[in-house]
Amino acid sequence: MNEFFEISERLIEQAPSEIVREQADLLSGGGRMIGIKGARGVGKSTLLLQFAKEKLKNRRKLYISLDDILFAHRGLADFADEFVKLGGEYLLIDEVHSYSGWARELKNIYDRYPGLRVLFTGSSILQLSDGLNELSRRAVIYDLPGLSLREYIRFKTGIRFEPIPLEQILDNHVAIVKPIWKEIRPLQYFNEYLRGGYYPYYFEHPQTYDLRLKESVIKVIESDLLITSGITPGNMEKIKQLLYIISHSVPFKPNVDKLAGRMQVGRNTLKTYFRYLDIAGITRSLFSEKKGISLLTKPEKVYLHHPNLMYSLNPSDVNTGTARETFLLSQLANSQTIHYPGTGDFLVNRQHLIEVGGKDKTNTQIKNQKNAWLAIDGIETGMGNRIPLWLFGFLN
Image (cartoon, one colour):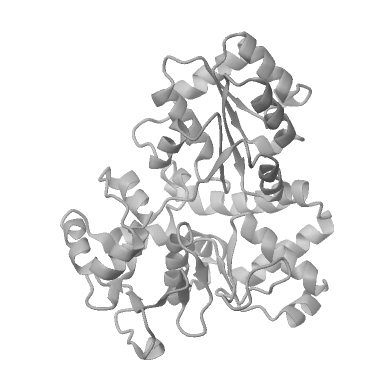
């Protein structure tokens, strides 16, 4: 146990404290067990360590990562028992999905040790999603997205702006932008953010970000999905083939019959692959509001999860219009419900229609539509239903 304490204290002490994401406040409340899920690279481990460093200075705490070889032959529940007997108050568990039977053992820990607070993190993959259902009555679960444009600006400049609710952006955008562009040139940071900055590790070494991002995507497919989905290594190549097709055709409008024949897989298998890529945080699928969403529903349109992936997976052929749409979807999807509309680009919360475009974009495509808006790139301030595209990056 001494070895674990030594490693824990060192990692907590080394955690950066210059900028702490606002989601760290979520760890202070919510009951005895709190889970943070999110794709690889969004900063879950850092958030956990920063919380321990800033909020648990005088508490008996221990940080562990379940992908550590030390847990290859050690039971999690027995470990928690030993920690509690030593006066443990906070057990911070990273990478829970790496440990077989993690949900069952966390449930046992919760029931056996009412004085122990447990905080855990895991990647938002199939095994984690299924395991969270077992903990639904015990744990409060939060989803940690990548950095929004607003957060990126804070990481880059140290200037903190407050999140802006969607209704305020739609109804009062002209007044809202003035105090923002008095402090920064938003288009400068917007164009930077499209290429890099969705994941906090961008700031560690921007020059190698594209390469690290691509490596992370491959690891998610070859490691996380392989372990958790039961897919064979041969079929894993099919998923990589599908991702290649999507990344070179975004936004991708799948013809399931044609694509299934080309990939030599069944229709339902192909739809499952789309779901895997969505859950893994690699793509975002849009579905028609009329058809609903189920395991067997065909997505109407498929985007990459965020625009950085476009520059990493297919840098020689990034379409500006698609990058704009991918940006807007990535900012909206973390807090709003998005559907594929018959007209326009995105139907938001089943009531707002948004069309994306450049400075010359007109109302033609959303003419005579109620609650319709244009998200316009290349402008600092808007007018009427023309809203600066960058402003949607301040939602979260």
